[in-house]
Length: 195
Image (cartoon, rainbow, N blue to C red):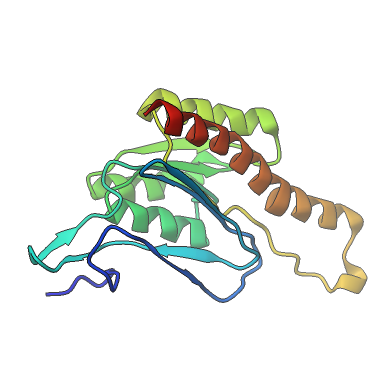
């Protein structure tokens, strides 16, 4: 029987597809087989995972042995991605502003037999971002995937949006994504040349 999260192909490649744009920027970095593949976009990018090995007729966990950092993992898109990656065999570093948002997600990851590291952080602060990277390396020894799903919407009309709200959105949605991509990217590139 086909698995509901299967990809259309039976090999180890990943299919990328763009979903409808949302109010946050999602960035995915993926390290695989000696190649760093940054994937950036202004709309939400999803990597479809999982599949059926057609020859063996068994379900294949496409992310087994991988470690994924997911920002904004406490709710919404980030939560869904974190739980989906756990179903596919990844261990997770769950990032949000508060640990309480992450407890339920971590429990869901662990129920699937995967490891979860809760890492409260402010994505706007370089030291906070680096502490997550350091904790991930201390816990798992490597980082394979980064998903920047942390973001806030701007709900006021442009003509009424305050400059403080504008700057806050830019800091979380853009600067936070940049800081995590930069910090995790350095580690991923280094691991490519040492593994």
